[in-house]
Amino acid sequence: MKLKGTSFEKKRGPAGKTAPSASRMDFLLQRCGIRLSGAQLEPLWRYHQLLRQFDAELNLTRIHNFENMVVKLYADSILPALQYPQLPSPLLDLGTGPGMPGIPLKIFRPDLHILLAESRQQRVHFLKTVVEELNLPGLDVIERGIAPDFDKPVAGVITRAVEPIADTLKRVSGCLKKNGLVIFMKGPRCDEEMAQAARDCCDDYALAEDIAYQIPQTPHRRRLICYRRRVAAFKATQAPDPPSPYRIREIESESNPVFKDLKKLLTGRGVKKGGKTLICGRRLVAEAMRCAPERCRAWIGSGDRHEPPAEAPYEMEWLQLSPQLFGQLDLFGTRTPILLYDLPEIPAWDAGNAAPGCSLLIPFQDPENVGAVIRSAAAFAVERIVLLAESANPFHPKAIRASAGTVLSANLYAGPSLKDLRGNLPVVALAASGRPIANFAFPESFCLLPGMEGPGLDSRWLDNAVSIPMAEDVESLNAATATAITLYEWRRQRKGE
Ligand SMILES: C[S@@+](CC[C@H](N)C(=O)[O-])C[C@H]1O[C@@H](n2cnc3c(N)ncnc32)[C@H](O)[C@@H]1O
Image 1 (spheres, rainbow, N blue to C red):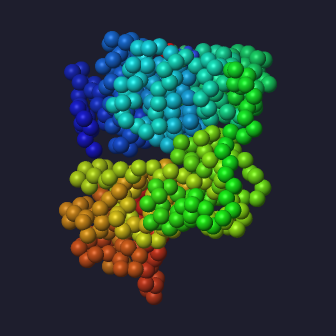
Image 2: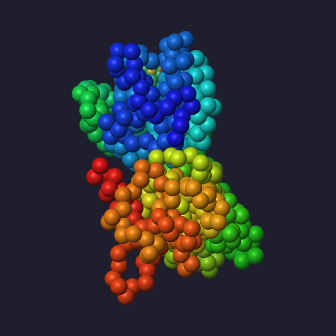
Image 3: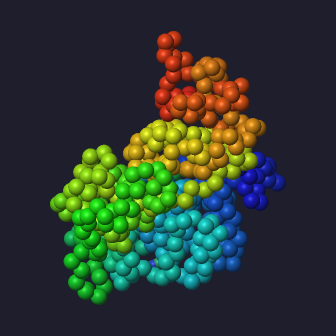
């Protein structure tokens, strides 16, 4: 992928040092254990350029050396996501200054909804410019100082270089939900602050994590200190909480229009038309609420009133269905509440862009195969998952379940139909007649094309096909299984380099 105003080639500076570039930034991040896709590197590089541009006038950071900026600002901001992957969302970055850690974190973890809170007007102006330029959904600026009267509900707070722990814990008392997390990015010596917090805030917060680590390949030591809130957010006005924050609607009749719309979501066509899906199963529902609370539209229950969990968004509706109606939606018989979930936009795939790595083209018509292959693609860190027009909807409830939820945060793109795939694409196809995979060296950049279930592959792709050896009397492997084996071999070769 080519970035605006730069190139991925290494450049030499005047003194023989490697000049700043996106590829140098990528290299430095990788040394810190952080791997970004091209689609993540581009906005980070753009952010870096804006930070440099505005810094001269606004004095945004004291770190100016390129390599230090990458390591001490961007890598430092991203590493909490590797140390503590269960980051909550929405996540308030309290005192973000020029956007640390919130902006690099958002680029690394696009699934998080991040609120950048900053009290100084000039910095707010810079943040708004960055947010507009990067155009990342789920990245907002809160232009005010956070105090206990700030009552927008959040599931977590993260903060770096702002103030002592106890002060922040008190400051977020109006917005942090019960069981929410406050994550402090600290240096190694913060025991005194923690002792103070234990004295002042132990009724409202419990220490949940204390993770010591080092920025890899550097001597810089860090600590991630997390506190879990034991109590509900206090309203600054002390007004009593309403009995339930959710609108509850009882549905008993098959002819209820809301129920009829829900039933349509049991087919791929209904999911596509309605722009929504049903997520079933306790773990997947919790995962979806954590990753994208803003997409959660309704909590669908039956029988005993299982309240939505504390991290659920208040705007969500609560539908209570009769057991008979619920049974019709409970495709997998989990008997646990189902989530009505807004689909994310799937951007169009740019086939002309020879981006590095693997673009997995999916033609499968069985939603379970689509889900299973997305799960494998996530496991083997495929760069792009391209859904061809023939593919079943990846958000069909069966696909979501087969993907074990990985579809909710996968790098999905919408591709053309099989017949419109350009003949000059660097396609590696999968076919029983192909050359044995063990003798094949995967190129740097390619499109992996498995055959459709049933008809298999169009003959125009057979020249560059690989096959997985099987016992003689077996006709074929399941398409998703064959793809998983191929991805394993691709990854193995890449690691061996
Ligand atoms: C030392 S800077 C750190 C900025 C950033 N977190 C970083 O690590 O680079 C602290 C920032 O927090 C902001 N700030 C301080 N108190 C705040 C509050 N109560 N709400 C929002 N922002 C605050 C300040 O304006 C300043 O920009």
